[in-house]
Image (cartoon, rainbow, N blue to C red; front, side, top):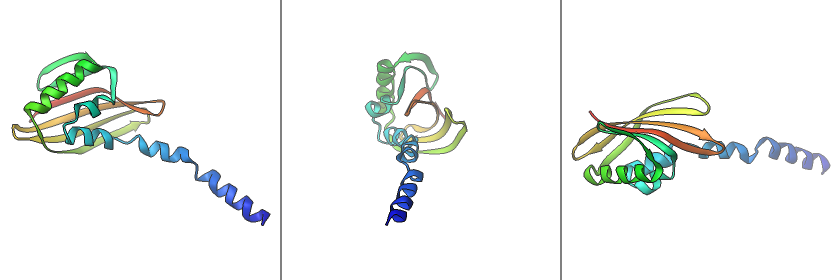
Length: 131
């Protein structure tokens, strides 16, 4: 019985919840927010200051200002689908993604740059460029 308890303890040690936390830091929630036009959900991932480029309108915005700009973009260009077509995760703390955003107004290339801070994913640069 002691050997069984020891084996179970070792198994639990190697199957720690820390591994599951890493999986939760995926870009999936950001993809869902863009796909459903939820500027509020997307803004939860913004840095306190974020670089935005919305089809040539570029600037550095506070988190709340950026949410307003994105909300207006989503109103004018409702999503008909969004998917990631390329990702670069060479640095464990910095990742870049390129996606295709389809709307009735056309297709936009989306460039997303994120950093991992503590156990949070933060967007520091976001671009929607009509293609």
